[in-house]
Image (cartoon, rainbow, N blue to C red; front, side, top):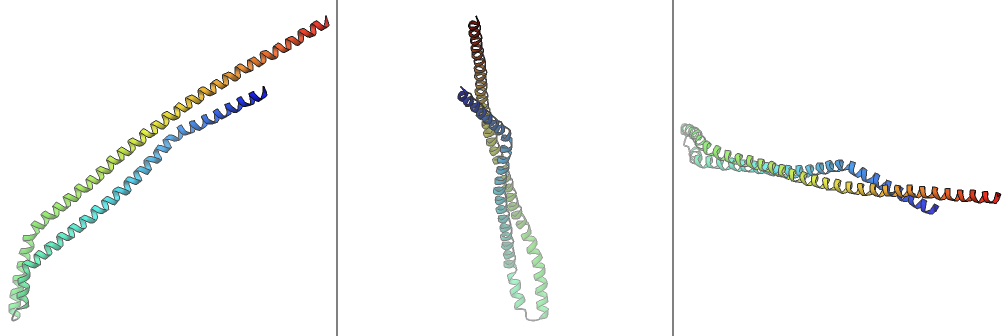
Length: 205
């Protein structure tokens, strides 16, 4: 009898411990969800920063390439003036050619500036669009990750809640059985006591 009581007591204790653990998991679920969201944000940020850095480097390279291209075009257009300056016969001729060179340089720079600015604006617009696309992609990925994390959290809560309800049902059943057994034991003890009293009464007669 005592062995059965001890075994039942151990079962109730084990169920109560499991119930505490499930309650803790339910309470901690929000913390777990926030940790998963933070980790997802870090991963997305690292990936986005890397992409934006690559875009910035590409922008700088394209602008430098554009500058070099138009600088070479300018040099090509003015090359014959440099040749004339080199071949000038005297100081007056050199100064005359230099004056022509400086005027031609201004004209060439003005002539090339419009075309260069147009191409520069095109590069900057493309880079701006790529930056916006990278940020939009990051936001979309964040939404997808957070939706998945939320679904996982809800699944965990539902499973933990179901486990809790089952444990509470089992614990209630154990307590009911313990209560019934306790009543039965009391009845048995009373019956034994009454039998002993009846026997004593008969013996006295």
